[in-house]
Length: 188
Image: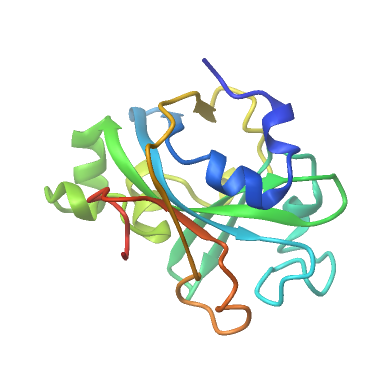
């Protein structure tokens, strides 16, 4: 059952933990690829690490759109990162999807990633975008459509709250969430 817009309008930290256990689905000409969300990071309005912290720009404009929109950007000139826009339109908040447990289209993911190691297919935001074929051409699309969307899943038994990874500003904030004991989490 597909997630509806109301889910994404909740406070960003609530959405970040509530995304765990849901299934991220990607339809493309290469077929359907999907994985269970096992790790997320929240980025909020007054957060020094949030791309929207200094206002709206052409790069981060999707963050200010309606909740349930994809915000995809390129880092280090080589890795795409997929985010789910949350909260109120015009504010600029989102949740980075950091890792998935692959469940569908695994051969396509292996080919895209150049590895058969299941743990390396979607453990990390750049890897999961490469495995699912998500690029900046998906930036700004609605997650209520048929290209990329979320399906209901199984609520995790235990969720870990931790500090975020790979940032300097706001690193100490406990805005990272992952499913305890899941082998597909990018970093424990």
